[in-house]
Amino acid sequence: MRTTLAAIAAAFALASGAAAQVTIVNNIAGSFIDISGTGTSLNLGDDAQVTIPSAITSNFFGTNIVTVSNNMAVGFGPAAASGSAGPVNTPIPDSSLFGGQQSVAVMWDNPGPGTGGTSNVFYQEFSDSYVIQWNMLPKGDPGNTATIQLQVFGGAARRDAIFAQW
Image (cartoon, rainbow, N blue to C red; front, side, top):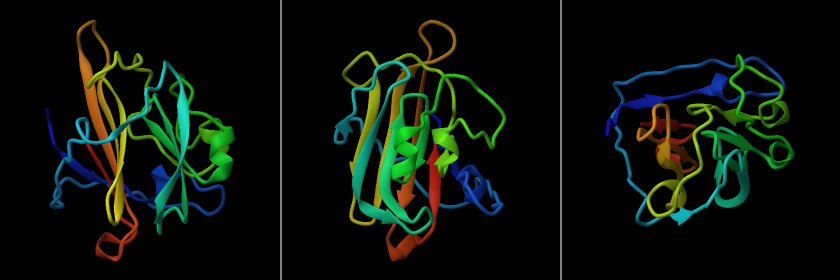
């Protein structure tokens, strides 16, 4: 599994207002935190999603409401829960992605649902962050899988930082 780190800033967060700046880098120290054995299994079916009230309020997104899609995207805030991350890849920004609310398309795609066990979507909170991990989801050719992770920070140590690892 590759553990390349990319810091993703604002334009992946589709704000309904002002334009945002995107920065993607691979030279910031960080680590993949495998939560497949310790996180909460979300048991998402194909093209499904779930809304989670987190104990962590992201300073970047200004909310603690997180909607996680099986299609490797996350929406932020209560209004995002009424939208979705459908299985259709379209150019970003796209008003259909979580109804145009703030969101991150980590790897907006249409993997199959997890088949249970470690092939699933997991969520785990830490003292100043939460991690969403799409773990071993069916991807591409039969037998291939993808594992991708989003870490969102709310604490002062990494204030306003969003990290995606895969």
